[in-house]
Each structure stands twice: as C-alpha cells, then as structure tokens.
Image (tube, rainbow, N blue to C red; front, side, top):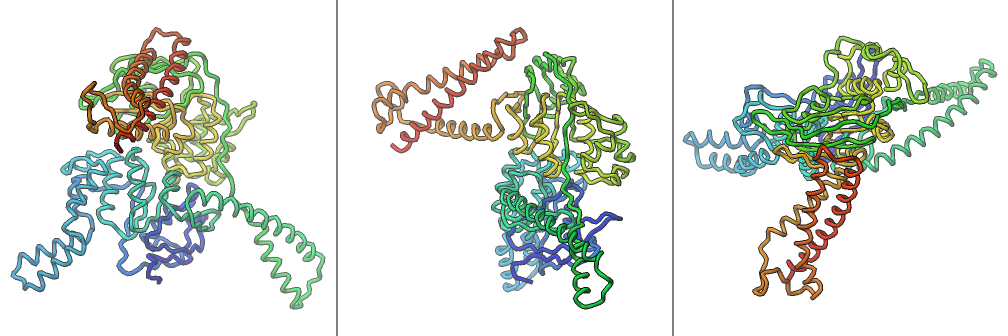
Length: 625
C-alpha cells in the first residue's frame, strides 16, 4: 500500500434482496483528503460508509487499512450512555495523549529507574499529553457545549451532535467518516465547523447535502449512480460541470451503441448460422453492443407541479404575541402581517424559539399574550422536523391513499396516488414497501409528498433539507421558486435560505425578533460590518482641546467637517428607522401607511449603509495617523 494511502477498497458490492446498491466499486483514501459522497437517497451512501467501519457488511470485495490507522465514524444520530456527563465523554476520548499521561502517572507511582521515567515523559511530550486538558476546554467552548457535569440524558439532538463532534476533535483520528454532520446544528456552529474542517490535518469522508459546505471543505467528490462509482477531483462546482459533461458524453455513446446494435441485429437475423471464426467474433461483439445499448439509465428526477389554492386579502397576522417558559423567554411583543407571496426565513441558535413560533402559528401551542389571526382562504402545509409519526406499519402507497386517491395538478390534470408516488421516485415495487424499510432520506421525501399533495397555499417548513439528497433539494427549490403562496422556512441550509427567502426573522435572544430585509448572506455580511464598526468605535481616540471632537491630523478640511457631522447623522437615521419600525407594531395602521413606511425604511437603510461605509473609510485614515 502507498505510504500516503489510508485505506484501499477493491471491488466491493452490496445488495439487499433484489435491490443492488453498488457493484464492484474500487477507490482509495489518502492522507489529508477531504471527500464527499454524493448520491440519491437510498443509493447506499450510509451503507458504504458503515462498510468502511465494518468490512464484513460487504457482499464481495476487500478493504485494506494502513497499519495503525485511527478511523472514527460520526453517524447521523449519534448516541451516548444517558448517565455519562460531558466531562466523562470528552475525557474518555481515545487520544494517545491520555494513554501517555496514564502510563507516566503509573511509572511515577512506582520506584522506576530514571531511564524508564524519561521514556514515559518523552512520550507525554510527543503525544501532546500536557496540552490535552487545554485542548478539551477550547473545544468545549468552541462547540458551545453545556456544563461539564451535565448528563447526556438532558441533551437536545443538537447538543448530542455537538458533543459527538467534540469527542472526534479531541481524538484527532487519521480519518473521520461523517454522515450529515451539519444536521441539527445552528448556523454559527456550522460556519465554525466549516472553518475547522478546512484546516483539519486528517482525512475526511462525508455525506452532506450542504452545498456551501461541499464547495468550501471538500476537494474530491465520489458519486454513486446507476450502480456505478465516479470520482471527481475538484470541489462541488467542478463536480457539477464534469457531471454534466459526463452525462452528455454517455448520451452520445448510448445513441451510437443503439444505432450499431440495430445494424448488427439486422446482420444477425440475415446471416446463416455460420461457425467461422470471423462470424463468432462478430456475434460476440454483438452481445457486448447489446449490453451497452439496452442499459437503463436512471435519470429520473422528483417532479413537482401541484395546484395551490388562491389566497384571499387577509393571510396571517401576528399581534404582539409573547411566549415564555419558567426558565426562558422566547418571544416578546412580536407583531407581523404577512402579505401575498411573502418568503421569510427564520434564523437563530438552537433552542431560541424558532420551532415554537411555527407551533404558535399552527395552533399546536398558544401564546401567553397577543393574538394570531389566520385568513379564511389559508391552507397550511406544515413540514415538521419530526417527520411522519406512527406510519412504520403502513406501505408507501397506503400513506398517500390516506390523504386521497388522486390529486389535481395545474390546468386540471389529475394524478392517481400511484402516479404521484412515481413522480416522487417511488417506483411500483417500492410503493408496496413498508415505511419502516425506507432510508432516512426516503422517509423525508415521502413526508414531503404528503404535505404538498394537500395543495397548501402557505408552506411552513421546519428544517426541510435534513436527510434529503441534493437532487431532491434542487427539485424542491425549483418548485418553491414557482410557488405562488407564502413561505416560512426554518433551515440551517444557507444555500436554501439564500435561494428562497426575501427577508429573515432573526431571533436575537431575550424574546427579541428582528425583521431583516435581505438574504442570509447579506445578513452575515451586515453582522461582520457592524462588528467592525463597533470594534472601531470602542477604540479610544485622541480629543482636541477646542471642541472635544475627534480631529485626525491627516484629514483634509472638508473631510474634517464630514467626520464631525457623520456620527450625529448616523444617530439621527437610526432614530428615524426605530420610529418607522413602530408603525408595524401598531394594530391600527392601514395598508397604505404600512407600504409607505416599508419604502421609507428601505431608503433610510440605504442612506445609513452609505454613511456608515463613509465613516469606516475616514476611520481608516484616523487609525493610520
């Protein structure tokens, strides 16, 4: 084995009953490589990853590991003993520094000779045993984990995921296998994790639908498709370009093979049953051509074209709603009036109240104060994180038929339950499979089908991207871009939010929710800009004796005047913006006033951005003086 090769996979295959996932696939993973596996739900991504941990899962083939390889697996839903504390989990991590410290303590407890003690001491230093304590503390803080003495049985799903990641990072294995590492993490943690993995010295093999993650972290793509295995040396953008090129070439080759097959078939039919060497060669060649020409390319995609009901004038109004629990204030005095075609995203850390807001709207929970008014024409479609409940004993087709035997599409066309299943890539055989046998992504796709077939005109989606494959995500995004109703989305998928949401509800803590007019990317850039301004404002500046104003010596006369006035102008604009925001909190404003206030705010925000940017430019001159 190559010294840089961590493992080699040779011609492994896997089937479940009549379904073959992959056949005779071969690849290797080298030191420091960062690889993503891309495939449709149910194609065998997770099965392949588990086979690398336990090669006995493969039906055929071999997997060879480098001697001493330290490999760890992060499943989609990690678990720990409920009675363990955070401290116990992290300090039980398999890091050679821990072993070295234990060995050193044992040597020191005995009457060992100086040479033995020196060897033990050297091993502690080489393995980083002295620094492991500070490393654990740093990772504990970075991953925003609960107190060290808190037991696992009190953890949420997101906290369990963060704890499992922290344990991996303490151990620093040579190769980490990660199955959907961003699921259940809030956006700040995802962005930190992204940066951490970019700089991680070990190798990574991951399954993820997060396209920003794929683009920045992974430099190699493995694709499982039609039982075949393809390798692309490049990031996600490169993969998309090369995949399109490969499929175009395959289409040309298949067309040529079919034409040649027809020609050879005519020759076979006309030719006498000769047994000459030349005829036998041509007959053998015909068999090979037939195999190529008759191959079935599975290029089906999820097809969504449902017929939403029209919305009336009144849609959804939230008037000064509040919600809290004994230990936490989630929402305080929040008001908003939804308009036709509105597309809003909801962002904030885990546990801040995002899902609670959705439950209040859906009347699953009730607000402590305030009122929620829903228009008579509104038909909600609520996609929850929990997914389908108590459906394991039903077949796929039965789940759909519970809602209806057929559905009406655009232009009056109708689809039966079975035809609709096929549109969502559940073929005839799979329609009669039990829900319990579906993969996580397939269950999510079926749940999405049950939501959309009710023809909602107001979609509420709580983490809809979890476990969905990229092809299904693309189809869902295309559908939602054309969707004429309202959208309200909670998601940690930054690409998904950027593509679909016009503005964001930002949960800022202490019950406060800010309405930000822009995409997720624009909000992150705004946060960085404001952080930069706050940093500069917090720096002490020299004051002049004349007027106690900052007068940087290298500014021109006109720039000095501008500098003196900017702080007051910015403060005045912020005051106007706050006054206009109060318009939206009032229950008595008519629609014209609200529309005008919205336009005024946009103008003020644009002017505020311009003045703050100018303030930054002048402050750069001040800092250099």
